[in-house]
Each structure stands twice: as C-alpha cells, then as structure tokens.
Image 1 (cartoon, one colour):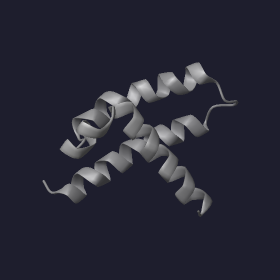
Image 2: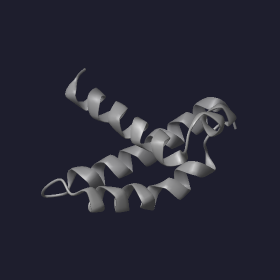
Image 3: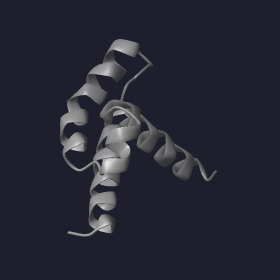
Image 4: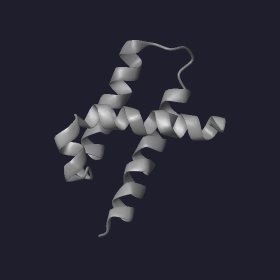
Length: 75
C-alpha cells in the first residue's frame, strides 16, 4: 500500500472519531478522552515512522480531528 492509502485511512478514523465527538450533548473531558482512547489503537496501526518518532498516537489522532473540524468550518 502507498502513503496516500494510509493517509486516507487515518482521515477516515479521525472522521469517525469526530462524528462521535460532535454527538456529545455537552463537552465533557472524560467522555472526550474515552472516545479518543477508543479510536487510538486503530489509528496507531497505520501511523507512519515519522509520526511514531514525533509524538504519541493520541496526539496525532487529536491533530487529525482538529484539522477535520477546521475543514468543516471552512478555515
């Protein structure tokens, strides 16, 4: 598989996570952490070497989710 396939997979996982996060009725740190923890193991499997060296899977997943939020808002 090439890098683009992995990137699409990472974005798909982040989209699932974001959809679940947006369904929360109000912001709750524990709920957000639980949702991120739920998707982190899947996300970790398709991280590239650069990402693994730079930071933790949860931080990368959070960044992907933030990027998708910004894309949805048109930034």
